[in-house]
Length: 278
Image (cartoon, rainbow, N blue to C red; front, side, top):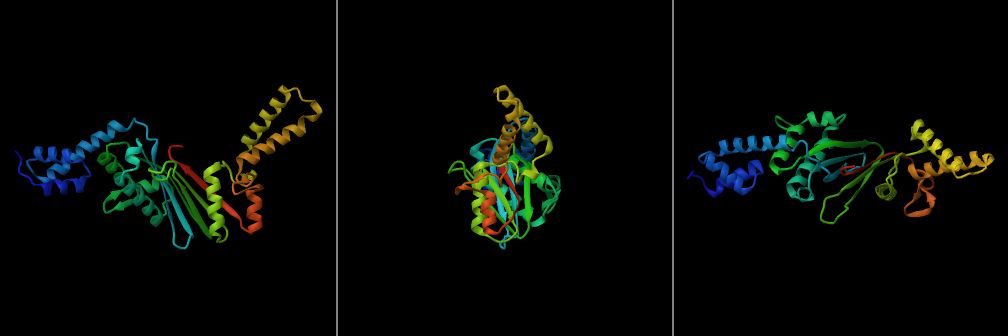
């Protein structure tokens, strides 16, 4: 029997994040040598990473980091396979450390984030791969967002009380208004607008909506003379539903989001909504 102590098992668990039985087995195979056991577990873990590549990662968490002065903020989505891992402390520590790193380094894009060094000699990609090996599930980092401006706010929504936030929203205003930022972010979380304004809707999308509206109206047998007005009304209805500024505000359905912003004298410059797996 290999010569090792409970302290060795504890040390190995802390170094690798592996389960107790896996640590004991590794120490047995390494004749009690902790360094060799670490290497064996990491090799085993990396083999598991390759096997998990084809799996689907549709659970996970969204993490938000907002600067103390609200002049910048980030959202990071870290995905895993099961809600069991998503709610684990180890997974959430990984997600938060990546978010803090992104907030501190302002990477240009997801590729730059993955290639950046999060610890001495370790890239974010290597850090994610290590989490993959330690947690025994496919772990994916493929989406993050970062804003900086006059005022950046966020809202995080839990779809289940025992899970970390599954929906995250960042908003950027042209001036500080904490209550309005929170309200608008909550609205975005609930109603998932695709675009900020009419001007942001791609021309091909508008053309497609107009074509569908016209064909639908003709199929309903509406008078030819009435077609332009009916079609325009339906296209306007699309804008009202798909654009944030056109939607009725969640906290006051009688007013549009644009109207609420105008009354407050605030401009919403941009927003992003991330929902885990979507």
